[in-house]
Length: 344
Image (cartoon, rainbow, N blue to C red):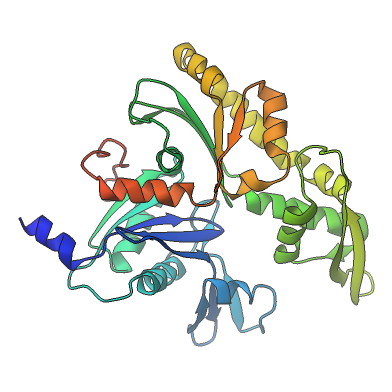
């Protein structure tokens, strides 16, 4: 009775706590927030200047005493205090009115995180105002968000390419049968683009410029039409600003390393899949989610490497938070899916 009464006095929340973006889902309202996982802090006073979109706009443009921090790295918490501040602000923004009882929160996390990293996420959420915290592995949340029959005795393979990690899992009977998690994602792609421009042209560009290059002319394989774009940065020899034109060919070559790591991880996951479930994957194909799946031709590359159908979902960025939201609404149904964590 008390538990039922509590649901009317609190607003339960599902969170996709990503390296690049954080999405918040409110029970009964859907996705209410989608902002970059960035916090701008004054190092002298420790005052928080901005969180989310406003903070991301400051990346690489702040005075020395103000730093724009991304507290999540490789899908896990790198800065405990800043993550707590960010979560508290996102929870505040997403709740239009105050409730008497603190919310229950379900958070999606990489399937390969350690026990210490799990505790860090739970503690951050509790300190940010959560009454109870539940964790769920991102591949399962993505599969549920897409609408795959994860409770059936048939194999469903999901590859979720996020900002910090790539999660590959075969799911059956509400559990992960095969699971590969590598710390390669959108951030790694941006990093190799920065390094390529620096090495080839002695030009230093920022992470936001690299992300723009990736999204505009980046591709995983030759799509038949090469493109060019203009970028601006600082010449490392003369020290003055410089403009440069780069082609999609060289960006594809720069992206070859992270692409090969994702392909290798996918092949490893397929090798570890039981034969009966492998047969289901041949019939159903592989479902791709996450922001990284929007890279041009990445589905074509994976299809060439595996000879399996690759299906990129319509809105890959929201699958995880939508699945986490479904779990939030039916915690008793998905009890086996929730990741257990022992207090240290």
